[in-house]
Amino acid sequence: MSDDSLDTISTRLAEFARARDWEQFHSPKNLSMALIAEAAELVEHFQWLSEEQSYQLDEKKREEVALELADILIYTLRCSERLNIDVLDAALRKIEM
Image (tube, rainbow, N blue to C red; front, side):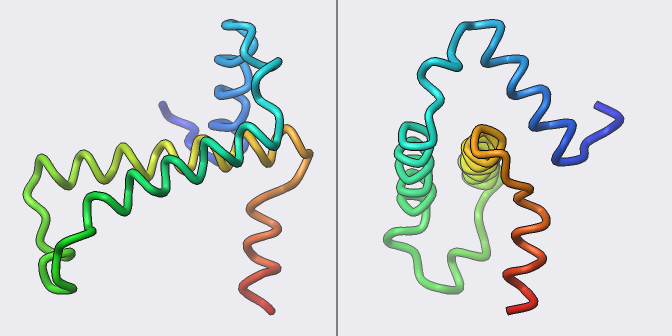
């Protein structure tokens, strides 16, 4: 994908959901619940590691973590799109706080 902006990814996700008739399931409530489940799956990869070990993942584990982070991003973008929130703007405002 040549254009990998958050807007482009969000648009592709919306198209993906519409093509499968998933919009009916993508309420902010459902998306936020899915988001927290994915965050828990991310935590599982680090649960029993030391701080140092958490930086030294093998390639297989690193890819698994990358896919969990992708799921988290996907649900975050879908929720922000459904609520018409510019999540990048919100993040920049939050940093300023």
